Image 1 (cartoon, rainbow, N blue to C red):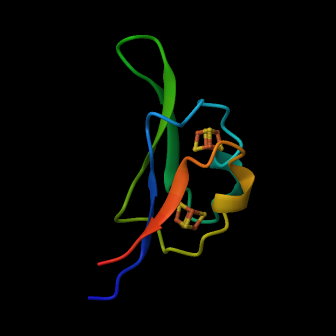
Image 2 (cartoon, protein in one colour):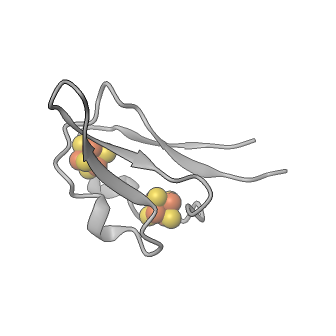
Image 3 (cartoon, protein in one colour):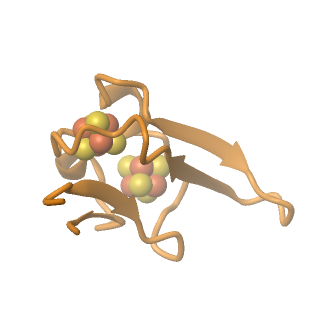
Length: 67
Ligand code: SF4
Ligand code: SF4
């Protein structure tokens, strides 16, 4: 399909939220998991693969993943 999306490496995500406000489509959601740890989830149906979020992550938690 050549459908490139951004994925989060959950173990690297610090839940800082820096990426969230920079997503033009609102595809990134910040939530608190059951261990009270803040992490993000990327809604792949909403992500357009623009990559704008990637440079805002200082922890290298956002990566491109194609199909
Ligand atoms: S690649 Fe673009 S659309 Fe997808 S989560 Fe990042 S900023 Fe949002
Ligand atoms: S910028 Fe990186 S560490 Fe911060 S919430 Fe987004 S993915 Fe997680």
